[in-house]
Length: 158
Image (tube, rainbow, N blue to C red):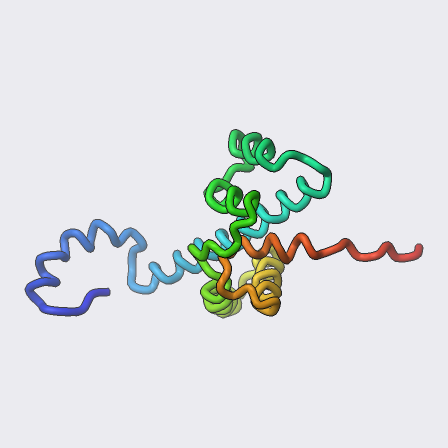
């Protein structure tokens, strides 16, 4: 989409065409929903892995190095992992409040598509919990703080 002076639009159209890789109108939003769904899941997975590493007493810098060299590496791991390790939750590259807006839009998109997204659904509850805990201005890595507080459910009697 573009708006403004017609001559200015005409001059930048060749550049805009190179940028627009999503295809027909509306696909850009659809792609963004899918990308953000995956980023939410990867952010939670990064936090979850690092909470587990902390609980078993591993050196988090060593965990970062090992995971970064293998198949489990993701861009979220590379970007958000170091913030989690150093507890830089307040670095708001993507604050929780923005994620709340985005995850609600994604949830509507998922429902309209009739898709099933259990990993995203669980990730969404963690972002919402971070928001409830007053971490709205903190970066998405704040889900790590929420995960650290959680304890496994008590075993049920058989």
